[in-house]
Amino acid sequence: MLSLSRTRSRGFTLIELLVVIAIIAILIGLLLPAVQKVREAAARMSCSNKLKQLGLALHNYHDANGKLPPGVQEKVFPRPNPAGNTTNFIDGTSWITFILPQIEQDNLYKLYDFTQGYNTTTNTAVALNVIPTLYCPSGPDAKSRLDPNGNVLNAVSTHYYGLMGPGGASNPTTITIGGTAFNYTVGNPGTNGAFSTHGMLSQYKDQTGSVTTGRVVKFTDVTDGLTNTLMLGERSVNYQPGSTTNDYRSWTRGQAGGAGACKNVTNPINSTWYNGSNNFNDISMGSNHSGGCNFALGDGSVRFVRQSIDLTVYMASSSMNSGEIAPLN
Image (cartoon, rainbow, N blue to C red; front, top):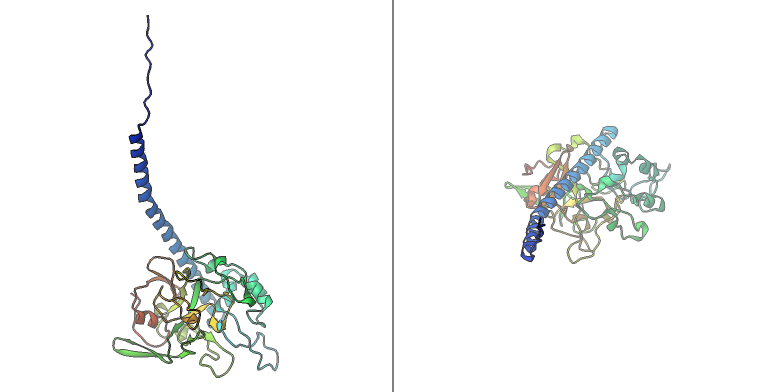
């Protein structure tokens, strides 16, 4: 008589199951940092590419116009200016608006009315548009940092800013490199509307009597060399921890008190936020990338500059024509 043997299946014991779970948890713990590093490297590369696009757009604008656009306009005539008009100054727009055709946004450019200020109903409608090229993937969402001013309420900002040059709380602002003192002219020092006059993208006025009246920059004016001069900087940080002060403004804003799309190089990278009072144009460049942020130089190349860079070297690198020898290392 044949006997049928029964095979008894053996399951996991509780201890074995716990060991498997522990091994899986360890593997996940090891894998997550690697995934995060890869993701951040990709975001940083994307950010660099966007700055590269903006740098090339500025070069294309220069090729077409023989000069760079103003960084931020303050007190300018309408364009075109009505015949005989000499007093109707408006708060103008930023360098970003001028290069819209060069970043494939010609339709928005055609909607912008240069006979009006940036904060009119017509031009605010342009400022509500999100242009992907203006935002770092590691930074806050474009619509999470909206202009708080009533006349341009809900206008989106930018993560990339023109550099007006070395700034400071005095005129002139002085730094010393290798025993040599360098002086920088600063308009309205120590106020929200402070502006340096040594950067590739700075303030411009039609109104007479200012050190930036009629100021335009050509590449031939950059006597320190395009490869040595910072032109654009990244500012894609979140709010200062514990603060809700909004320091983002419309990307179309020129200089109306503070500048919307340009900053001075005054403070170390990732160090200084808006105090709600008098330092709006001097807040730091910075990012959510680890240890620094991206910059575009005058030749269109892009470099990651560490926040540990010597402040005097950093400031000098944003000056286009003062003769400093201060390589970005």
